[in-house]
Image (cartoon, rainbow over all chains, first blue to last red; front, side):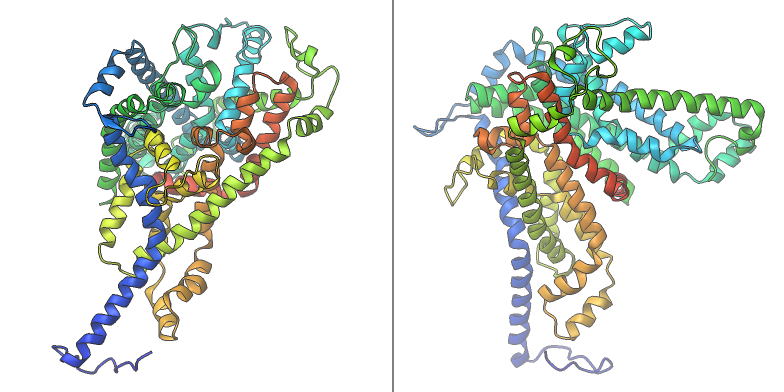
Amino acid sequence: MALRAPANAPKPVAAPTPAAAPAVRRRLAEQLTAYGFLCGALLVFAVFAWYPVVRNVVLAFQEVNFVRGSSWVGLENFRHVLDDPLFATAWRNSALFTLYALVLGFGVPFVAAVLINEFRHARAYFRVLVYLPVMLPPVVVALMWRWFYQPEGGLINEVLGTAGLPTSQWTNSPDTALISLVIVSTWANMGTATLIYLAALQTIPGELYESAELDGAGIWRRLWHVTVPATRFVILMLLLLQVVATMQVFTEPFVMTGGGPQDSTVTVMLLVYRYAFVHHDFGAASAMSLLLLLVLAVFSAAYLRVTRGRAD
Amino acid sequence: MRTLVRPAALRTRRGRLVYWSLFAVTLLLFTLAFVIPLYWMVTGGMKSSPELARNPPTYVPEEWHPDTYTDAWNRLDLARYFGNTLTLIGGAWLLGLAIQLPAAYALSRLRPRFGGLVLGLMLVTLMVPATVLLVPTYLTVTDVPLLGLNLVNNPAAVWLPAAANAFNIYVLKNFFDRIPGELLDAARIDGAGPLTVLRRIVLPLSRPIIAVVSILSVTALWRDFLWPLVVLPDPARQPITVYLQRISDSTSLNLLIAGLVLASIPLVLLFLVFQRHIIAGLTAGGIKG
């Protein structure tokens, strides 16, 4: 290590030529060290994150052939995908799944969080219980619920029957299959949203409620005019995240229904999987993925705007 | 702490009545929704096959067969598939930290030129969900550029893409940014190089954030299904989740249920032990974006 100059020593204004070379060399060495620390990350990102994005776009316009090599086919893949009678079905199912999941997976955790936040007892119990399913692998959850949903002798119909409520065919009927999957996905994932809401609720200063009360606001108006605005940012953030997550739904339909009955649970990702790994049509799969990517990019961009706006 | 409900209202007779009835209803619904399914699974694994097929089902097993669990462990060869899962997750976790910690440290403290650009390009990948890039990433894994390797059926097919985790790098970098600079300068003046500073000063100070990042990575890897399904077609190399899905139609129900319960135990235990860390990590990650 070189000798350090005393802090109050006058700094040389322009480095004299003999000293310039070591400074340049030192800066170069610093940069080399920095990039040495970064190189592992740069490599895995280049190969497994950045390159696939570019490749997805390229593949969508190619016919992939491992033996003869790939060739450009223009918009052929998109035409093929659009001509598939399942195209509209898959998009409708994914959109409906997302919509139902918003209604259920959004209202339920918010209400649960508001209630838990008011309770003075058993809060840890509620918190642990609601988050426990998040820790189960989604495949396990899907296989479990496939069994619970059995119309004859399944847990769900049994509980409903005992309570005197109507039973259902659940995943066995095209009318109820999609909503049955939404229920499973909500059950498995609502813990995350509930705990994030709870954390947000705990940051609301109590004085806000007190002053609202002095202004004569009842409990519903306090909920609407204090609680909701104070958690608006978190609500919006989770909404966007959830749309992005549920538009890609795959595991539940793949494991529980295989897309049936009567294609009522064929989703976009299930179709991508079938193109690629059942029919080995990687071009069509990429074209479909690219369409999904474009749709999701809108929501991702909105999410970034929201979080960025908050950070500033 | 003051919340939505007026504290005074809770002290009135009517307030207490409303509070306790709401509390009871919520407690009942939560227990029904989250305890009953788990109870049903655990006891289902102990019922005999004919009892499982019965309609209406039995709430408490008539005959207890706890040996179904040992049966499932042996007959389904679960030790091997747990081992596969452990290899996949352990390798991805260690490789991930080995790549992300130095990268985050470099971006935070070593001032690489274009560091902002590099971080930005990494963060952009968060906008593109990994699932959507299934096909191009799969094709990349079958023929890794420059090396020409085919990683299908190789655990590295799970390890390497998992290491490219921008969220972890971002969280670690933010934490490193908050370590007081004087501490690092002092070490440097004593002659410590960047690697020593990272190992001796930064890492020991960062234990809590490393715990959070580790738990998030392990949980995500444990939950992942589609990626191991496509890159590990060889049944002998699949993680336990992919394996259970594959055999779900050809195995008797009581063995399958016992297998599902056994496959859930490790992460549930991890959660119960590290509950505080997990919930803290979740809400920190969630709220700060």
